[in-house]
Image 1 (cartoon, rainbow, N blue to C red):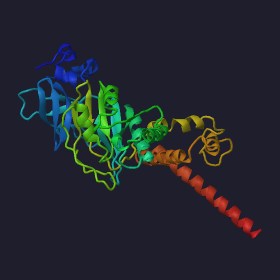
Image 2 (cartoon, rainbow, N blue to C red; image 1 turned 90 degrees about the horizontal axis):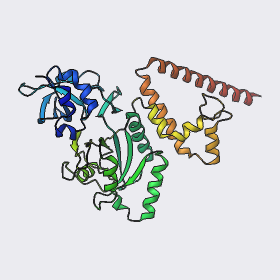
Image 3 (tube, helix red, strand yellow; image 1 turned 180 degrees about the horizontal axis):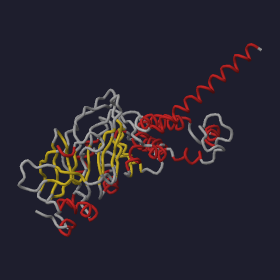
Image 4 (spheres, rainbow, N blue to C red; image 1 turned 30 degrees about the horizontal axis):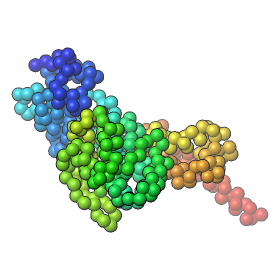
Amino acid sequence: MSFPLSSLSSSSSLLDAHGWDSGWAADFAPHAAQGLIPGRVVRVDRGQCDVATAEGVIRADTAFVTPHDPLRVVCTGDWAAVDPEGADPRYVRTCLPRRTAFARSTSSKRSEGQILAANVDHAVITVSLAVELDLGRIERFLALAWESGAQPTVVLSKADLVPDPVGLSYLVEDVETVAPGVQVLPVSSATGEGVDVLAATIAGGTTVLLGVSGAGKSTLANTLVGEDVMDVRAARDVDGKGRHTTTTRNLFVLPGGGVLIDTPGLRGVGLWDAEAGVGQVFSEIEDLAGDCRFHDCAHESEPGCAVTAAIEDGSLPVRRLESYRKLIRENRRIVAKTDARVRSEMLKEWKRMGAGGKAQMEFKRQGRLG
């Protein structure tokens, strides 16, 4: 059975609702010639997945799309080529090349990459106002979001818990200082505050909800979808943490257009080859670095360093520079595990720093002897 390109580009409303367009149709054409049908993966679990196709949501086996590389396994949001109706069992034969991919490093000692969502246009980072803001964690999420190719938005959920509008505005400003170029929205699913603005922001395209357990992602997903599609449990009063009510990544069609991927709460937010994303989050530091006297300035004690000058005059917070250094170091360690060139550069840097430390100690020792 063939599936002409002309019919693919004007496929059923179900495919269209899940984000099908002429670009995907063109990419799928070779698979259509083989008699396969297109569909979007809406859930993956236990070696199988649910796929939204023109005939409806079907169940398919993922045996052919589980390579050893964890970043290439089938994921919620992928567009797939699936066996046609009548095949038993039905398999996902391959996935189309991803336009964007949201990935992080796992918490395992191997530090492998883990794909969280595919073909995402908007990344909504959900932060609960029921607990103290963790600006460092927000910076991590933003780095991964920018690196993925998605446009991030920070949602300050449970805004009804901060009834003082002045106090709420200060919290928004605090987050805006670590999120250049990113919209920061206070939202309350309980009162409806900010929901319309968020819905309009993500209308069309694919949105992924990200955050730690208890951030209110599932409640927000239910609010945006317009029905209770996700189980919701109360967060603990003592620390605002919730249990993992979401255990798989699920894709839902939004009433205003586009689709939403809800994800399990993330305990760890490890970077994965996110140098460009880190640079985007700390764009003010990257801009300052361009004015340093030396192109390889480490922004420590070098003469003519524009970054340390900004620290001294108070225009750049010390916390921002420390966070930037931390994420850059972490990302380099991750990349070095698979990149021999980066490993060599890091080894040279460590040796240089070690030699400098020995020289400084010898200088001090000679001074004491003198």
